[in-house]
Length: 156
Image (cartoon, rainbow, N blue to C red):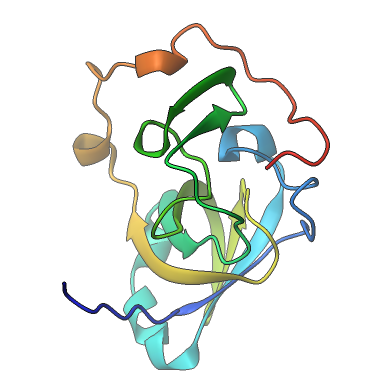
């Protein structure tokens, strides 16, 4: 087995300090503003990032709880495999969100649509490029026809 080490390149600052306050997906937090702080040693990597309207943030679910390979999700009471969901309690605890990039101020990105907890460790940024990322023939899998519903209190 290979040992891996991933070091954060920054922190994501959001208004959400508890799991219960945190939205489920960027779509449901479209007006939530956050700041992505890139550590100074990685700031040069932001060159030209402001030419994109949207970016992917890849981050660690550093406060996720117990890993269950099959579990209920916020869309369904029927259990699904963890790889068929976006649940945060997963073996490598990696999250991904597409946010709107509002502006860049040196090593700080101002973004809209944050759906992660405050001070979440950032592991990577990638530009959202519609001609590469938009797949018109993509299917919704088991989520087709499911309506979003608020998560019950105490449920992650």
